[in-house]
Length: 423
Image 1 (cartoon, rainbow, N blue to C red):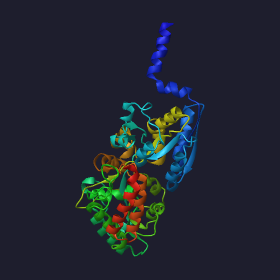
Image 2 (spheres, rainbow, N blue to C red):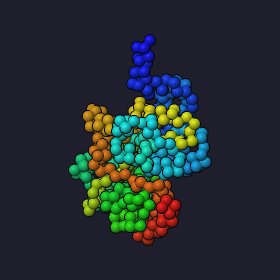
Image 3 (tube, rainbow, N blue to C red):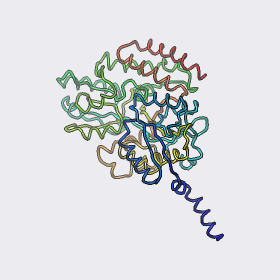
Image 4 (spheres, rainbow, N blue to C red):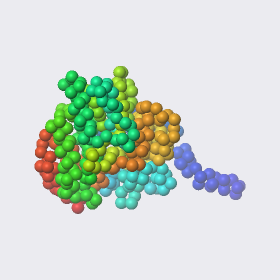
């Protein structure tokens, strides 16, 4: 009898997650993004199959509406939601406001160490771990081979040692547009036009930053030399050189590239799935360019998974969060969505797994290298949402021809007032 009890005790210690999963029942609701529907449905089905008696329901919003939905529902202390898709930049703000719950009791130090350190840092606030990363991110410069061929331009190298400069890209775009014979063809655009996530690397390349180390100070940063110079270039490609289109929304950029209307597209890795499904599209990739007076910088971080502080079933919500970020659900999601992993073991596999030897999956090998050498996260601030809202509008004004320095000085005044509550 004593031996039997000892065996049970050892099993309970060695396999706590399996023991817990077998006894968990109930329903959790996941507040998430509509664009991830197909990939997440595969994860949810697998989770329910491995957790009998558990049901996962979702409420989905398009990207443009997701952040407002989270603010409204959690701001009202709504207990109907258990798991929240959370942008990396919002973790500290949500934790500060009591929206999300610490998960240190559910994630051991060894488990947290399976994620890249930068993303663990993004998911941590005030010394507590709140949100494991769902994925990582990296952008490359995709190019249309037919448009380059018509202009007699060799394909850019995929080797980071031969990385192009943004100044070179402008010259190539001018040649491509002149050779195209089509006034609707442009040289360059960004997938996420005027959104700081993608535009900030221009600033960072020139030594600028979006906010001070205190997460509040903006004067001297968003109107500092590096920021001003990068934004002047951003204005020039739209208004002076006219190699980048106006009147196009972020939701249209990938489609324009796939339709052969843009020669170079700065965009995410997972867009290869769209390109592969586009008949007749001949495309390639190269590392994200940098300014010749600066350094190579690529965007990083992405969405995390949080547990609502108002959830009535935090243990089950945390179990789902772990399944989605560290368990089998992570592999299902990454495969279906074509995403870039936040897990160190998967990042390492990009360089050894034969699947990534050939195009287009070889782009993940480039991204894995960029994650180690050029990745630059967005600013950490309790007031990031206010900061991003103001800066997105400012970048869009600059794109449409507004004076760069005046626009950035105006943004400083606006943010000084809005961020005052965090001082």
